[in-house]
Length: 596
Image (cartoon, rainbow, N blue to C red; front, side, top):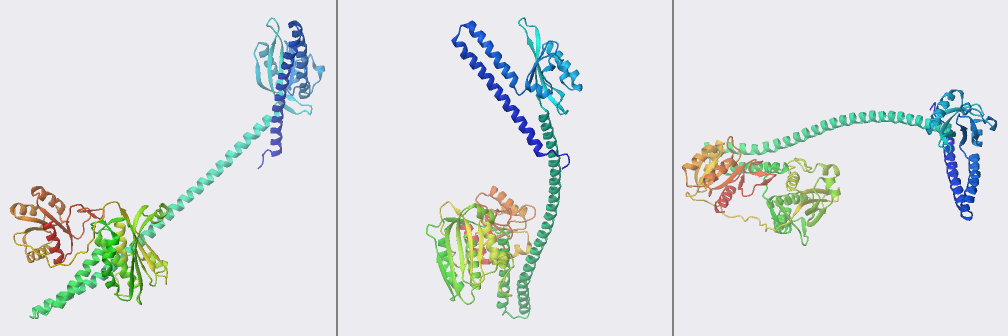
């Protein structure tokens, strides 16, 4: 860069400064030795002789110091005329001893003489002058800068008899300082330039990041819309098929009955099957969206898998060999036993479909610890988990299929062989339960799906699959207050309850329900919908129990969020019958609440 000081010149200046410092240290050491010698000599003579000898020795040493000192030293009389100077002064000022008697100001460059005279006047007035700069002319004729120090010399009476001068060439030091200032200035300029470049690069990067974030947001929105389209398309396809069965079957029933033909059982059965399939589909959708109400309890997964073994073997068929590997000392977990059982059945059925020619299926349990690294990578809390794994020896899945396996309505099965909701239902249930699910699969190597449910620190509860019994019935003395805002649903529910033998009082909303409760003290059960205009079912139940603390309550709804279910878990002490419910489900649940 133009104007840069050569590194060699800078190094030379630094070396000269270091050499001057070294000579100063030598001079200080020499002065200390003089004092030591004087002290030693004084021990062998009388005090007067010692003083004389000390003076003689001191004069000799001081003369040696003055002569050989690296700094220019000279003395003047009280008028500022030179009376003595050392060799360093002769070299620095390019003069010889014949200049003794000349005014000291004449030793300096013309432009500095007035300044030197002023400094001499200050010293004659008794001031010690230090660190003042002046200009001289070297032997080569070059201008150099010296640092001048002047001190008055006092006589016995205290009057000023002369002046002592010290002068040090600081030309190189000043050049070095100037070079350092210029270097620092250029460095600051370069740093400022680089800082501005970095700032501009940062602004460009931020702009690019915002642009990319916007683009990624648009892509995510497109993917969401694509997923919503796939979801709604799948729902519409499956529901239309189910509704076709229901509507077509009921139309045939109407026509046959109108003609007096009572052979309509197969059409009614078909309509029931379609309706049940639609109900199951809504439950799977709720499971996928993590909105299904869960009733978790402490359970032992080993016992559950053992109890399910016969059911699973019948489901899998004879061509599938099933094995269970149950861990000893298995921890307890806290989950909805019915939903966990459904999840295991779903995984087993998927595994069966992946082995059309037969194979081996293994259900394994184990205690596991998910460390921080795994937890961060898979968005799951680190800690201890109970693992239930289902492994098959089927055809396996490529990575692109594994990536979509939990998507709703995604299936690799043929048309009519699956809804594509089995794995998404498992995923929704596990995540809603605070757990994690992971697929390990390779084409031709089979598949392992591992469910991780959080460890539960508490007593285990025995899980027993309900045993099918005869339809529970009521009596006319057991009166149920039914509150439902939908007229058709209310009329149907009244008929179902009466068919079960119960007395029924019906109301279309919360306010009407409270009036009916006051008018019918014989009511023993409030059976109410949750989501209603005005007073909802939860508010109705709270007011009813305030009036009748012994009143039993059963809620029913198709969607429970933030009413009687929070964070996916049914509130403690709440009884719930999910819509739509069969007559058998309604009879069993009502009998359970009344007898509870």
